[in-house]
Image 1 (tube, helix red, strand yellow):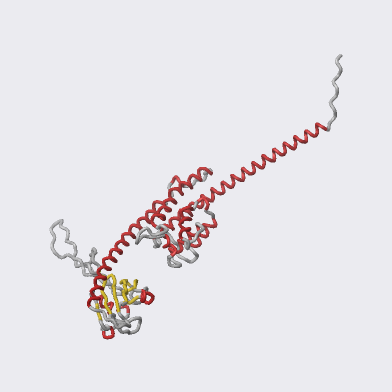
Image 2 (cartoon, helix red, strand yellow):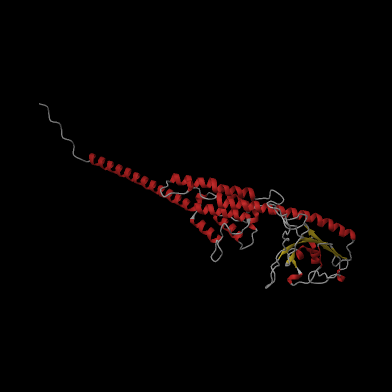
Length: 392
């Protein structure tokens, strides 16, 4: 027996068509006393998009390669009527003992095959602000294609129980994901708009000394960059800390060429690491010293972040949450790269000055020693001193 789960997803309408607007509750038409608020509108029955598809996300091992990632489009997208969408539209189970005689016919992998089939919709148990419970989130189905086994009433009962359990679990996961996204969006917003903003006391002036400039860079690294590092460590650890938690390895799985992937590649170049080695990448993120950043590293970072011809990534760009944290990392490091280079130049100039002074001192000492030696040599080779006059 094959078992699989498909989730219902909205799809774009065909060219020249539009998705019908969602229904609206009727307006209140009764009379209200002065100052009285109208009652809340009645909630509407669950609504299905006209243009949608069932996307298979799980299947047993024998069917995984054939089904997972595939889609069954709704009839309104020009596809034939199907038993799966019959269950979706009617919001109830569908059971067929002989699919060769079903109406509409059941087609497996674009060809008719003998067997039996059962499907249960995954229905929401929670109401929304606008709709009643019972919205179709997806389906769970099973079949016995190319076998002599026929699904019985007991099998349908088990599938029904699985559907109820799956509906509650999936709904919980969706709600947890929604809340997590809200939380992550707020964390990223606050980080990018407030926490990494340059405070006035960290803005380098024109008359900075080595000591004062280094103090400002260290203050920035210890506050703004440290905040980004802390969030990366807490929110995207090298390994998951919970069943549904995030992990830093997500950065190596961003879709190739996507904005999130560009951010990850840019950070890797900036810290001279690679997202393919997550533990090393995590260590490099945390240990990176902004005072060591060079113009070459920044140039490589910027080239990967915003390659020629690509749309520029900004704090408002829609990217994955880990990528938003990495973008904040880039923002702080690149902003500090200018002062860091100035500090390196000032230190090099100071070192060169000290070296020149030391060389001048040594040269002066050598010259003095040579002069003294010459004077000593002149004293030894001169005329003998005159004898003293005799006393009278």
